[in-house]
Amino acid sequence: MNSHVSHTSIHRKSPSRFRGVLAVGNHRWGTRISFDYKVYWLGTFQMEEEAAIAYDRAALKLQKTNIVLNFPHIINTPQEKSFQSWYSDDEILKMIKDGTYSSNFSSFLAHQALVRETIADSLINSKGLSCKRLFHRELKQTDVTNVEGLHIPKEYALRYLPPLGNSSGNGTQTESDPIDITFYDKNYVCWTF
Image 1 (cartoon, rainbow, N blue to C red):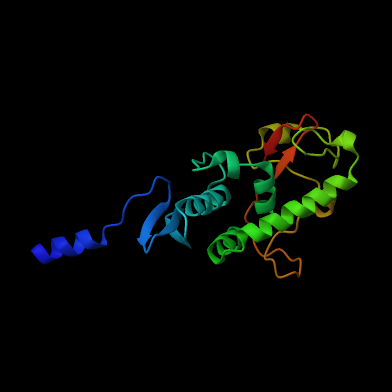
Image 2: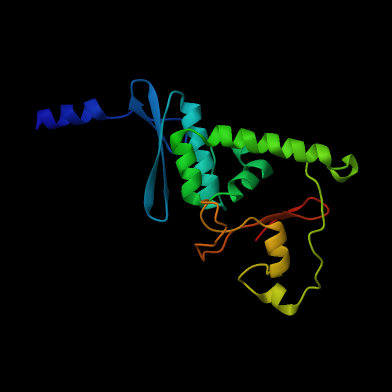
C-alpha cells in the first residue's frame, strides 16, 4: 500500500494558474479541452501562457458562446473570430496542435491589412472594420420567428461567404451542419447567426 501512495505522489502534476493547462514535467505545460463529451489534447508548450492561449483559441472555436477564457482581451477579437470562421473545428485543432496556428493567423492579419489599405479611409471605423452592403432584403415574419437563424439568399451566400466543407480545394460542401457567421451592421454592432 505504501508503494501505491508513493507512486501516486511522484506522478502528481503541479496545478496551473490557467484553465485547461497542466504541468507535464521537464518544465513544460500541456493543454487539453473538453467539448461534447470528448477530450482533445492540444499539445505541450514551453511556457504556461502559451498553453493557456492554445486552450483559449480552441475554446473560441469549439464553444462559441459563454466562453470562459484565460486571456479574453487577446483572443476574443473580431479578427480571431474571422480567421477561425474560415476553418473547420478539426482544422483549427490541428493547427493548434502542430504549432502552425500563429503563423497562419499572422498571414491572415497581414492579408487583412492589405485589404484595408485598398478601402477608402472614410469606410473604416476606429476598430479597423470596414462596412460594405452585401444585400438588402425586407424582413418577413419568418425572419423574426424562425429559430433556425438568418436565411441568406443563395446568390448572395455564394458571392460573399466562404464555401463550406473540407479545405481540399474542390469547393464542394461535405458537411450539412450549420455554421456560425458574424456580421457587423453599419454601426459596427456584431451579430452572430
